[in-house]
Length: 518
Image 1 (cartoon, one colour):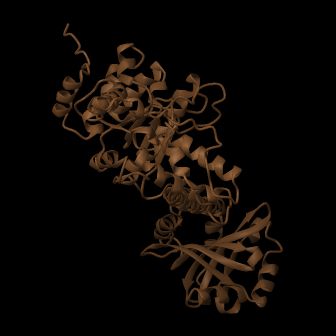
Image 2 (cartoon, one colour):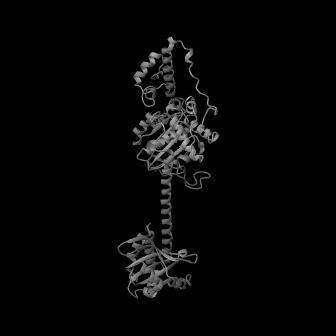
Image 3 (cartoon, rainbow, N blue to C red):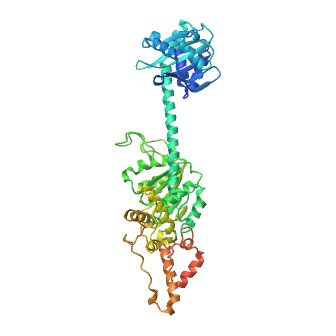
């Protein structure tokens, strides 16, 4: 006869040695069968509100099996159960033997529902707070298979089986919640994609070159630096890169580096351990960790404090982080996209931005032109915003544009870029509700037109040159004198850089001075 302490220890180890309860039951039955007659072991939970028994798992000598089978109980079976449960708190009666399932209404109904042949049953009632929660039962085919000695040995396992059932139910609840969270995430991702649209407005006109560069880099994991004035839609370009990449099914995590206090930047980016500082009441994953297998978008990267720049450089070099207050190194699989409206190259010269970080980020720069340099997109943008704002403002029928409305928008220089245009459209829809939209009363000051009538006819060719010269100078100001390469004036103007240089010499436009070698 087996030693009861050894029996208890072995069963507990086998139950606790497996995360999935069906695997634990399978390990148990192989040990139990050496000491007790058993063909199957079942773990069942009583669903009081349904008046039914739910089978969670079962196992035989060949395999363990997860279950979620709800077996309704007949009126006769419920009456029998009520009688059996009268003394449930009596430990001596919490272990039961039914040596002929056909003579016991509840056992007969349950085994029949499971397509199990008539059997002998040895079971333990599991309780929570004195209430019946379920049972673990051994089934051995035939009649009269169990005796009191079996019951005494098996009855000692009440606590480990109760813990096993509780853990199994909690584990399944966690998996269910995880699946629900993943489903919610997929739904929100699709909603965001639907709201932002599959196509960026202006991709066929003013942003055509930008979108070509997006397609060039999207499939790679290279860092991307998006440059452009505030309000040009740099975040939309970042989304476009992510959505066109192999990481599109992964997370897209955005963080505005200029909106977080210096004291919290490390915790926000890299996370922290419980107790790492006052107020750190629990462990927290940072934005980088949340972006694993996806893309992290660092907006306003030029606002990042010097100390955080050092730590960001390490992440870019090693793809590893450590949480604040932690010692564990966490490996990451992420794609980094940064954006700024500041001149990082000038900040590097003034020692306000790390040169090594600048080189790491500036692998593939994309310059997003301002709205005043892509006015051909204004009609499409206006219609896009009218349709979007009509939904947001719950306007059944989208308003139409008044006569000459577009002309007044094109004449304006848009210092606030696309964001300002969006706000102007919304303001006009609120003011001119139920009327054609017009914008002449919204305080938009048009760019002063050139008074061509005051020019002499003989100077017309010179006037054309002056216009070309002025346009080239504006683009050079935007690119800070850069002519060649990505984001250079040649790319923006759509001409060969050497051709542009020749034109600049002809028009007397000075070149950016080269740095003297030390």
